[in-house]
Length: 311
Image 1: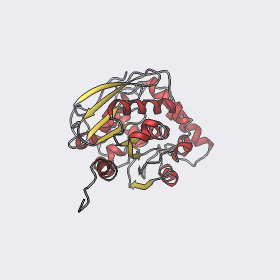
Image 2: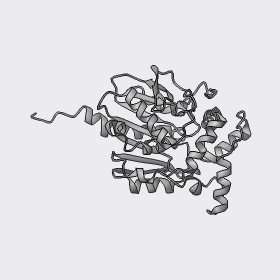
Image 3: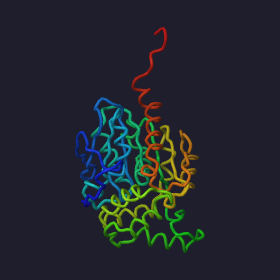
Image 4: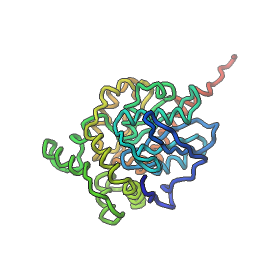
């Protein structure tokens, strides 16, 4: 399991959950789950990305838990979920199914938000019975379905074989990240955040990413390198909104627009000028607000329909 190095104060300090539980995935992998907010409130499920943890959603959890039941879980090998030898998109889909079954009542609808690999998790599970049963709407943040290495602009040269090779070597590095130093913060900011990101945002991201075990980071980098979920996009048949930063080097806006064009019930793309890959941390109010809108429109309204006049 990772060493937990989250910031201890400020908007990105992880809130204390109302309760914690463990879900068991199809292959026996154990998944750490946190539940925040009132049990009777509309549910929101949060799936974090590569090398992150539930701490990544701290700002969203803090705001939404006032009047939502917020369910956040650590992907296998991340945060408090033990590593597993099975890494792949099927495992991600299995894990999300296990979380939904463990936390939601039969037929209960939730808004499911996924960032980066978390968004890929939702796409991988698009045809799974649990997602079809429980997803009222989806938010995909800073994510893509395929060609992640080829489209990345982390290396600022023309697209082609050289850039792809260099990007693959960097993102798939086995090197330990080490302590969070000024140089480490600068590198992480360049690769994953917009140029205007505030120091406290960079610090929060750096602590989360550096807490991810080296072997876990490498194993999942290989999965992302070979990712191809294009065939799953059209199977995600619930209302789905897409958010992306215009300065995202890991999943540039080309991915967001490809997703939006292929989604059966796409709600369009929200581009965030000057922001990078870590949109829930870089634009916490906007991402939280988008989740609230989806809850109000697609899950709260369905659960509590308005009584028509004269009924």
